[in-house]
Length: 253
Image (tube, rainbow, N blue to C red; front, top):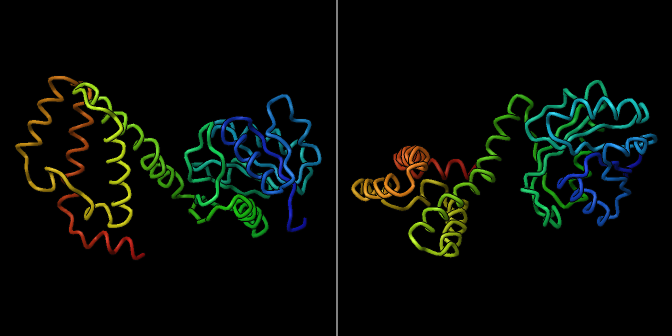
């Protein structure tokens, strides 16, 4: 197998479609994204990349292994799944650390977790990431669920929190734009300074009277959000008790 590969993508969802489009734009020979009725295209495949839901990886791998040549490499794009469902094939994984939507127009500058059962397989994962303009890092199999949980917090849960902020603002007649701008600035500051040093607001100042008034307002006008508010307030108190130097130690690693 040469340093350039033919990549067959299985799964015509958002990720499979975006990867196929971006790899093709980078000059890679791409087949797909394939749907359920296109599996015959796997015959003669060189590198098969499964972009399917986690629960379907094992079945898709079984189908691909039965059609692709014996020396074809098999990969998946799951963040939480190890390489085990692809066994006994020579196998790899590439998980783009990027929230892929229908409007995603590329992966350049994003990071991704890679793994491989052999040096050649890891090389294929790294090569695909390189053609996409991505940076890569390794995650141990035992740590993959925790890594994926961190990714969910950084992306999915952060989006949910903006939704909660918008709901509270809408009840109070406040526009969403300024809140979103504030959220973006807070993320930038946390990245630059570390979470504890970037923390502001009544909890870090020890102003529990203001926090109590906020809580009372939520209990009165958006009571369904109160458990989440309490959990976030408790987590923020724990962060506020940390010394800022811990952030600098983390950033220097």
